[in-house]
Structures are given as C-alpha cells and as structure tokens.
Image 1 (spheres, helix red, strand yellow):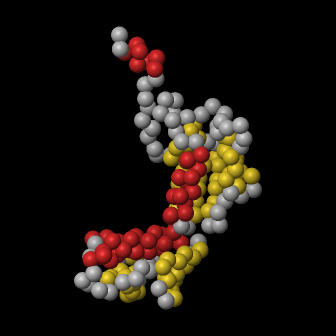
Image 2: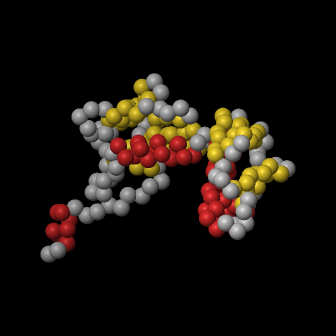
Image 3: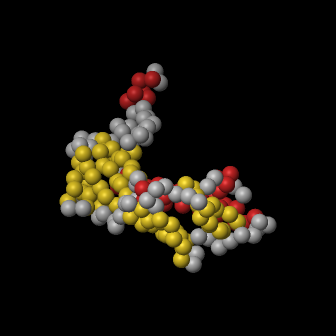
Length: 183
C-alpha cells in the first residue's frame, strides 16, 4: 500500500459523506462534490476519518489507485470547507483583464479581446493586474488557470504575458546583449 494511502482523511466539521454504489459524495458549506471510486479500492468511514484500503491485497495493479483515491478525497473535503484559488498576473504594456458579467475578458495584444466563459463552480475576480480563479474543485480551478495562462504564455525576453503569481520567468539575453559580450 502506498505511503499516502495509509494516512486517513480527516472529515472536518460540517462535512457529510454518503455512498451510492461506487460513487462517494462529499458535501459541505461551500457545495458538494462526487468521485467514482476505482474498482478494487475500498473506502470506509470510521469515526471522523475516511480510510482507503485495497480489496484484494495481492493485486499489484491497484496500488497507484490507492494514493489517487486518498488524494482526491482529501482535496474534496478541503474544497467543500475552504475552497481553492489560483492567482495569475498580467504583465505587459496595455495588457488588461476585466469582468463582463461572470465572464472574463482579456486584452493581451491580439487584434480582438479574448472572452473566457465561467464554468459552473468557478468564480473569476480581477483586481488591478491580478486574476483570481476560485472554486471548490481543485482540478477544475487548476485547469482553468492553466487555460487562461495559455492564452498568452510569458515570453523569456521581456517577461510579457500571463503568469502564475508565484512563478519565476527565466529571462534570456537578447541579440544585442549577446553581441556585446562576444567581443
């Protein structure tokens, strides 16, 4: 069994866990999420803990699914209680982000504005040059943040583009600076 799967998931106060066939549904103050448990993996509720175990101890192919299931359940419990958020930063002359209803509109140097529709369960907010993507599903928040970043990737010469708030961009030396250093 994986080291991660051995750690029980703590069910926080105000969180309800229910099982329907092989689907586990976790609901809390911010909403509810569901996850299909892989075949051969067993999830039990004991006291205030979720315990992940393997039905067939001899099947080596199930081992990766134990850690995955435990991580998904932990993220679901955290999501329905506190939620997740990713911050993106715009850098570049004339680069702007603004809200149009619940949609995000980006002006990032193209001839047209890029409109990104909000998916159910996600919220966008813009303050100055920082875009915040928040929601209860960690996977959905991360995928949407990656999609927004892919609209205009940060380039290495001037650092213009959309980057994560804590991301470091490796800067390259331009042609002129290289030529001076070669003398």
